[in-house]
Image (tube, rainbow over all chains, first blue to last red):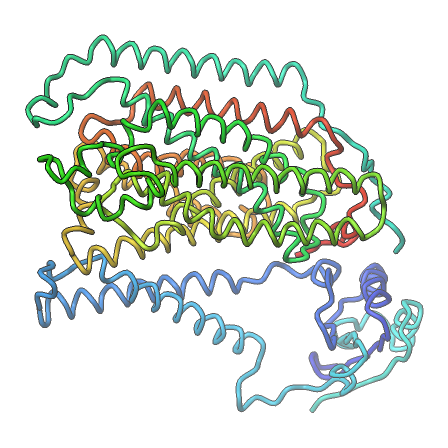
Length: 176
Length: 430
């Protein structure tokens, strides 16, 4: 069976049941593909065993890039390309550079972070998001389990695991 | 999920042990010895005749002692009043996360009556050596010292009395501010202790009302006290950002002190229901307001530097071009901006006591240097500096404030056990 194609879905009505279910399902050795929720659920990262996001590192690096870009640009313009005396100050009057440097740092950190997040989450405008169950935008929580990844367990066994964990219904979903 | 907070002993009290008191007294005596050594060195070795060359006042060693007294008293007054301010903010913002920490914030206010007495009494002893505007001849049009600019500002100090006499308006403000701060503190304190006896939400609403009133009063009084006690030292000079600047400095130092006490208590096994999420929030406050202070500091500096108007830029020339003070400008920025900014940037640093203890201690020292730079150049000029007297006075004040705060913290429950938001705080998760 091919990976990332065929899924078994557990549908949950309540986030407390869901949090409990995630621990139970992981306890049986099943690997969870992803959990979809209509709103942020506190503590879900911990029970899913997710590692901390690397997004802050991307933000920091893009911020540094902004700082370097801003300082290079201003030094080049004000000191090398077209030196001007403004207010009797030195050509490269560093305190004057600070506001622009600050703004470009923030701008690049923010844009870089949003860009990285969109790429990492497959949110590109031409991308086709996979809808596991349309009700995850309304009132249901859905736990998706990749059948190929958990091939050591049969479909009926996975269904039992999900039912026992408190799922209100169990469905199958395949993608082309 | 039930009442999870009932799992904890909410009646826990902080045991201000004899060992801890001894440590604080050791620091106090150590500080006093250093201070005395500094005074002796200045009094016996101060044979410089530099001041005579200026033809102005001769410089006396005790002026440096007076300036130190003023620096520390203004600084620690700020830390004390910020404790009450931060307590009030929690109620005005209806914050739940901070519920188990409220008594720590509040306990800083116990220093306020002492600070008020020291400030008012010391004004009459040191005021003339600290504040240039107290000199009578400045207001006498026939005197060679007559100063038109200060004469124009005189009503701010002397109204309704005659210029150059008793600074009635100045003293009235000082008494009014300290009086009102202490009254508000007592009101909030008594209400908070009443809550321990009366379960329910009624006390919370009362505290919120008094908190809101205090915040309105503090918004005005903190700015004016900054002009009065600090900015008027450089009497000609003015900055419209100065109130905010002093407030920001006080706020960061106060937040650091509150975080230090919280981490200290947590390490000794108190405050069981406070976890790394609450510590993280305190760390975020310290981080954010360090940047806020830098923003204010730099805005003030940049505008003055860019406009380059002599009457404004003289303030920074006195500091940046002085052999005595220019290194401390960079110490100030390094300790109060670069260090907290770089170290507290990551999530882990804000969640672990060890980083916070280090950074908060350095910030408390750093903001002392901020006040040092505000007060000394205008009072002592090139006769100032950082030496034994400065270290000693800081240790004496610091240990006294610590003693008063911890001693009063130990008298009541550490946690306001009937606070309606304790349960919310218990589930606080970020």
